[in-house]
Image 1 (cartoon, rainbow over the protein chains, first blue to last red):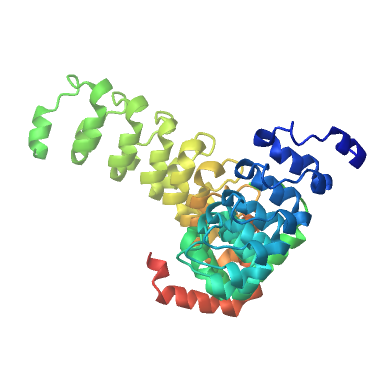
Image 2: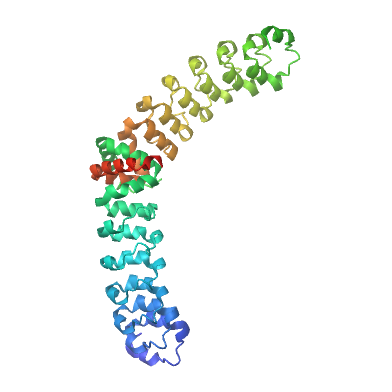
Length: 210
Length: 205
């Protein structure tokens, strides 16, 4: 919808603000300056849409008292460049947004990091993937939530700290607990095996994994 | 019961051979020469009792045509020392007996080994566990059935052949591949981690 069309169509008195505020943000963010009304906007149900679609007007709409902090995961994901303006550790939705903090706000890691509040269950992979620079600050073998995904993230992104996290992997995989000492004791044989695997097209052949 | 008492009481014509042949093999094997009658013994049902309990009389009872080859796993399990006498790859029940061959007849490996007949799906782990000294003869990555159990057997018993079986493991498990690569990239760090892990009791958890 062009600006002219929107102006013709738009009638704030007839608009269903209660149920459709989010649609304004979602579909008409380009005309934010026309429709924005902090008093009529449905903050409770539609705060998420402001964060998601109107981050360029952040300074205009941001109101920490009105914003529904249940939706603050959207702030972490879409308004990371305004992080310092909105960050409030007591109000932030740690349960739903910890992993998004790790993914999108890693440059402010030292500001937001709180091992007690962080949702380790959902956010461990994201820490390993996006906050490897801060590994020594966040690593806690008792809290890191081990899944295949989080282990892969550790291996792929935190190889500099292999000596720190390897015991955790060994504690969580019987096979690796047996295999890794064997590999370490027979580095040459293991390298030969890896070479054989690679030469046989293991990594590039796109063979179906069993 | 003494030998004399058994001899006095024994009446083959009154014995229910169809239902109770196994009792003779099970409880009266020391009087085998008294009760044994290959024409009356119920071979169909109780061949495996002979193999399991009367192996010391093997040469007296063995009859390849009467023995029920469905029970040939029992020959592999209990009568390996006589394998030269009973072995018949055409009659042997490979699907039930491969495990027992690998487990109990590893010393006679060259007699029975046949990669085309062996039940790889059911007994690969037994090969790895008991026949590691013949690894070069049986190892076939296209046939070996890699599972958690068989992998543990490789890890435990075929460590010397790691360069041969590890590629197969790497191909099957992306996580293992990733860990092995990481460890090989930093072998000294890995060694240090292992040492710390051992000291912290990680291995005994």
